[in-house]
Image (cartoon, rainbow, N blue to C red):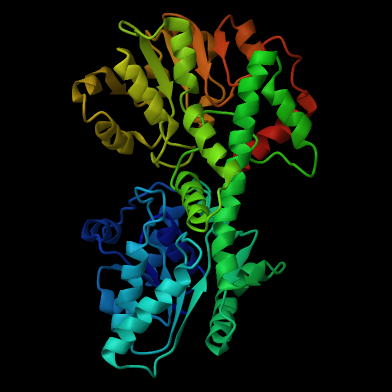
Length: 474
């Protein structure tokens, strides 16, 4: 099947590459010439495990093309995926300018019937706007004989596991219109997604608005779980409980489960922050206040300060003369995405307090340099106190404390003796609860986790390996 993917960000690249890997001929369009040039030269503008290899083999096979030619992209396929960004506007609503620009181009250049698939995360009612824009263009060209249908097909990809999520989906949501064009669009997309349904039916068909709402509802629910656990973790510290033991206790309830119950420094990335804001904005536009969701956002904002507050509580607010090693820059492992990353809050606050920081991340250093320069644009001289290392252990040499911000696998089992010997003082602020307090206690390393209690009983070792596997999947 011929397919066009409009947008070569996380969603567009993963969607295009994975669908090409199934034998489809995919045309990926982007207006950013530099990005297209990079892709055509063999580079990949994002870090996503396994994606580069899939792109390379499908480009070599002639099934995957990258271009800025809008007319050619519309002519290439009857199925047009819109996978462009929907960044938050100043009021928290989703900015649809790129979605509607893509729709306008489709209407302007289409010469045959189309199935237009909204893959971008968009507010309820966006399909109606896309339909209106395409109709405007068709009317201006006096081509009423052409037909099209707009389908909502939201993505459910976790950065760092996007290829796996796409190729092994737990559900495929299709929102279609209840008319002849919608029926034809559904038939086309069922054929496209048939390879994913061989084991069992994963497709969930619904009306368009329900499909649009489903994406926001899913992310809002997951964000709620994270903020809820972070609030419990903060309370656990005050009452003397251990949040990891609490997580085991409630996660074993099948009605709750273990996923997204890890206390930490708050969520970030390209989805949760903007989607929570956009859904809350949608509610306000309809005269409703989503009080739980607004609390979720407020808790997450405050939680990004938790490590900073722990550092200040130990050393005071003047950190001049202090050097901190920092492990992890990206908002989560297996990605270089720095959007709303907690590390940005930590680094900015500590540098402004006079500290020196020696940081490491396996893949996000280049992007971190870019965004931190923006964060500290009002005080660029502070960046002189920020250094990056090629190896994690290089950062701890002469450090007064180590701060864990991102739970990369490479940080899980350090050499405690070497770590302690390299540091000025054996102190760890663990923002992801990677380590067991009793292990650090035995190593004579001062430990500050999130909601951890060093006096609590040890974890049930019979469940530990299972919990670590669950952590990797999430």
